[in-house]
Image (spheres, rainbow, N blue to C red):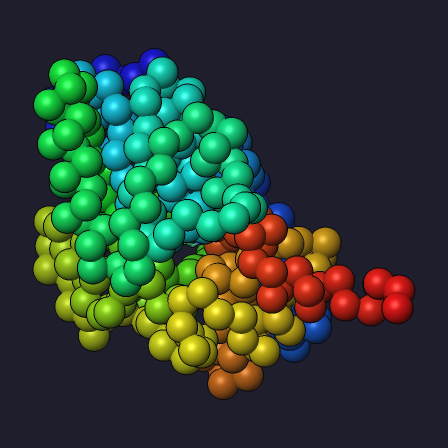
Length: 328
Ligand SMILES: *Cc1c(COP(=O)(O)O)cnc(C)c1O
């Protein structure tokens, strides 16, 4: 199940389907004022495991390490609609490991979107209460409890974003070398930071535009630290292209630019974005074109990082999407 490690390469669990496709988006490109050949979509929503998404690439490395350590149970943290938690649950099922998810908030009356899939994949959930501060310490406690019962827990970091997990996005950047050697800018949602860090480590800071979603306090510093650790060379926050303008009222909220971007991508290309991550990344891309930061005649790649189940766990977005279709 794992590829044996050589001296310098850590062990990797095989979980996804590679390479993911790179597809042209000519109708969306024209709608944004770009040339029809300027905009391409890297389909990391099609990574295969558990409904797909960017977390699969990181989990190949973090789960590879867990298996090498003899882990019996994966423990990770997240928001109730965490795509990372859902894909950790799926990875555990695939690898024959138990999974405990430590999620922010309280149990609700029903489970939708990612949370319903967590249950389907057989993960256990521990509710850590409101406010994100207790998540990491609660996960440590859960790991201790598991150890006390003879389990071997492996703590997978928030969003899978350690330097080890970010290796998955060095791989993705290598795929892009082959698929779009002339790429000028890849646009990506910046959550816990590992995805952007892996891309920057391979492509350089000037070719990656991250759109902050409000998941961490200091997005540029988070990415620069991960990139430095991963590449072994210092990367300063100032070397990074990060947009901070798409957060709106906060991580879980739907903004008007995001609703417009979601609708535009769906109606021009039949591509579904989610309100938290990929919708913000697309809204950031729209703004970057308007400001001339992304210009016609340059190859731009939009990294589709997945998140479809999150759309089905976001009532405000579902209501807007379906408005006008209902009687009464
Ligand atoms: C987690 C996530 C991201 C952000 O990736 P990070 O590596 O956490 O920055 C983007 N899109 C989706 C759909 C995600 O689930």
